[in-house]
Amino acid sequence: MNVADSEVVVSILKGAGYSPTEVINDAGLILINTCSIRDNAEQRIWGRLSALGHMKKKNRDLRIGIIGCMAERLKEKLLETDQLVDIVVGPDAYRELPLLVAEAEAGHRAVNVLLSREETYADISPVRMDKNGVSSFVSIMRGCNNMCAYCVVPYVRGAERSRNPESVIKEVNDLYQMGYREVTLLGQNVDSYNWKNGAAAIGFPELLSDVARLNPLMRVRFSTSHPKDISDELLHVISGHNNICRHIHLPAQSGSSRILKLMNREYSREWYLGRVNAIRTIIPECALSTDMITGFCTETDEDHKESLSLMELVEFDFAYMFKYSERPGTKAARKYSDDVPEDVKSERLSEMISLQNRLSARSKRHDVGKTFEVLIEGTSKRSEEFLSGRTSQNKVVVFPGENHSRGEYVKVTIERCTSATLIGKLA
Image 1: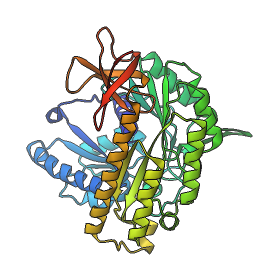
Image 2 (image 1 turned 45 degrees about the vertical axis):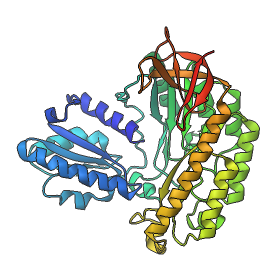
Image 3 (image 1 turned 45 degrees about the horizontal axis):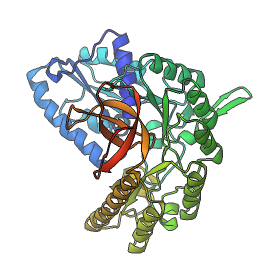
Image 4 (image 1 turned 90 degrees about the vertical axis):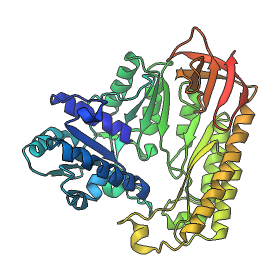
């Protein structure tokens, strides 16, 4: 999401006459795009600001800005950081950046963190910042209406609003013409996408189908789905289009129905497993990944064991796992006690990661001997004699591939695997 936002920001500033640089010492303006979902992300920003302070002492004309979620959440604190921050801009105010930068250059503090009920940046063509020129992101909506107890997103990114589908289709088509061969449709909860124009309405299954029909050579991914909303209709759309990737990221967060209720996730363990069963039935070759939080308020050893058992039942191909981090202003911070000791959180997280490592290794071993269509993204990080790409299931594959190049599709038979990578040869 932050990558997509950064590309919008670059486009807006380029339109006002600014140009990006990859050499930080050449910059007259440094903008740090921030995330507030977890505390460690914010702590890294404070560390980065401290480092930039030394640059600012050497260059009085340097302007530093904080943009994104942290800007909205901590505007007052940011402006008190020893005069380091000149510009503070929330995620719905990027169009104002040229004016705010000019204000900062005139010696004034420039702030705009107002949230919007309409802004989607649908008319702005992002400047692509990815390095491989093969895969890119397209934001289809902004904000979130789900009030998960632990999550700060609704407070810093505002209410949910969907982007005009015609602008999404145009952006994806433009990416194909530019040489891109894979696009990821982004939203805090893509299943809630709902564009209305008078009496007409377009939901996410229809949008996904329309994007997939643009060109069979353009792979389509999406993130993120919410377990309470992912529908059989959507699963049948995925099954019906070969170029919609066979991978669904479906955050569980916990395997305990009691904890899920406290989290206000609006589904139970049984509902989640039911959705997984539907995915396995309708799209048998689909890979599944998830997010898991350990150590949420009042979590017991039994709750933790239920999370581990859920992971084993589903056999996730990969997962993002975190210790619970209390975020100020959320329902959990207001109403619950962060009462799981830090050492217990760490121990449970370690156990969870160890389990997922075994599940991921098992998943990759099951792929040995199979043949997959791989989209080449470039050369392997370890050897230029090998190419690297991804399967539809979002698994990394490396293989020797003379006479093939980035952006091509090739068939690769998997011969062996490591903990992170499939290794094969051209079929």
